Length: 127
Figure (cartoon, rainbow, N blue to C red):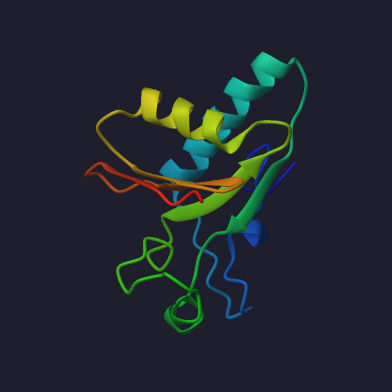
């Protein structure tokens, strides 16, 4: 159990450079919990949520290949994640179905990007 929700702690969302940027957007956290509830109901057991990348300070973000100055990670409203025993495509499919006209949902090999922007954005960076 995390300090933000059943599956998430503030430290998991914190910038990996250890600068202290550890925003926890409420809508992002709630949406991740809905994802976990959905797939735990399907699997019939507790699953682990793994955060690849959460918040990023500007200097850290600059060093991420392919990242931009407009990254939602810098705003503290995004994360890249994967769910134990669930294919990343299934996670993205679920999010796109549940939120057809809002949020940023990106597909990557082995992980899903979610940000809680209001205008819809979709992309596919799988190889």
